[in-house]
Length: 360
Ligand SMILES: NC(=O)CC[C@H](N)C(=O)O
Image (cartoon, rainbow, N blue to C red; front, side):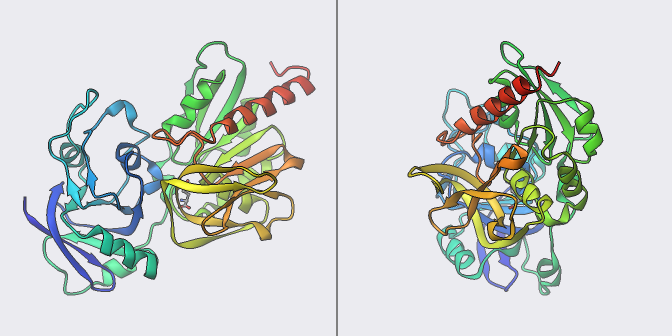
């Protein structure tokens, strides 16, 4: 293994060893605290443009299992304390290093990820570079910004995914960088899912005559998606709607609300989320850097709040038969605490169909 460096935009240097693709990279350095689920993390399109650092000190121990992929690998780089090159699992197909080489993504291991995480927590997310030689000038690193993220990851052609078992509902899923498990969770509940490009117009969405509209997760700054926000404002309230993560943020913006960037985001599989009008707290999977300012929305009510920092984790829009969450009820590596939200969506569609006298 060759020597490599992780250099932060403020000039701090961490020496480690190169793995994955032997190329240099620049990206926004973020950390995720999941102890497992690195396959889902690496293939979650919401990480587009980011160098992902795992705080758990050993990665790759169960190898790569393609069936667990959520989407395309969009990370700019990967940072781990210790890379396991002898994975052991009955489902393992090949190792993590091979995967990153295939994807042309550089990684660095052997760096002090605890120290790095403390820096990010204190300073907030920073840009960084993974390189073989320490750059004399860090202007390129400092100026790096994630732009056009949804356009870069959304599908170009629509696709249809039939229900498992009896087909009961037609769902239009707006793909802003959708994780595959959102589709699977819907299919398992009797939904025929039409996945549409995030560039689809409101007219195209409604032309499908769906029983419900699902808005996916996705990368980048939500406020950048002016076109998508305008489309949501047009179709919201026409049929039941459910939004996850970026879908939650875009809905808030469509309702005239505001979003803002968190200091270092929520990324991991143990984020506690409290019900606003109940006593329950759920453990959730999350991956986001922006949040909704719920006080900026008058047409909706806050439904969930993060128990750690009290930021908004969900909104209900009763007048529009819509609800959205910041966390991931579809999380594949778990926890599954909030998968009941898919049942809520299905029951909203069932009621809507009954009220409409069937929607065939
Ligand atoms: N997972 C997501 O959908 C992330 C949403 C948005 N890109 C954020 O970082 O906040």
